[in-house]
Image 1 (tube, rainbow, N blue to C red):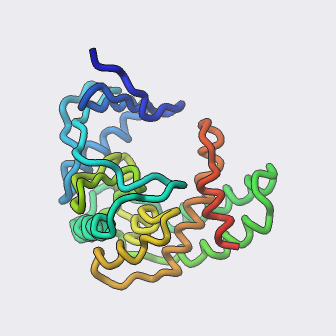
Image 2: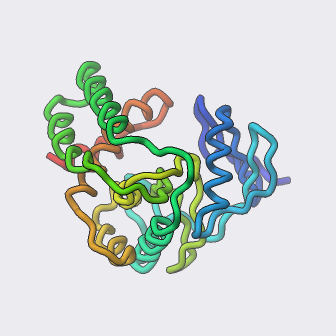
Length: 242
């Protein structure tokens, strides 16, 4: 008899694995709608949708393993990381989804709110927040919207040897900044940025990448705490900017 594995669970959603099937349970139907539609549009490998009965979405497991985990060294090859960069480029070259993405004003406003909360509640030293808020400024510039995954962290990109077998968790997909995806992919794995950029195949502004590292981490800390997760990997990213 196959066991039920809890992959992730919090107040908003849960993901279970039973054999080779993942069951995603999401109270917000909009997120599931986005995920299904984005996977159908994406020009890169995604999990097969087996069936859907809201609030449950059943997906087939991908071959291979995730590129890595935030806060842990990645054992994936340089070629696999380069292949992830190439997959991101293929995605970004595709027509973006028809739904709206986050605006620059929305991103900046939320960042300011998160920074204020972190300092007011003594979660992080003020100098860490101030320094990273300055670094994040590089990301707060106009961008040409492309098809972005929106949460392209290493645990969402699967590889078998040197080949990318698929990308999971598309609920944040939409028009956005290409460099946000690249920054999310390399967050906490700065030593892999060169491989990713090589696979991506074009020059990128490294200051913008660093800006998104700080911005994403500043935004993530409160959410992680409030949902019962340890934010230390994101805090380590922020401390590294000092």
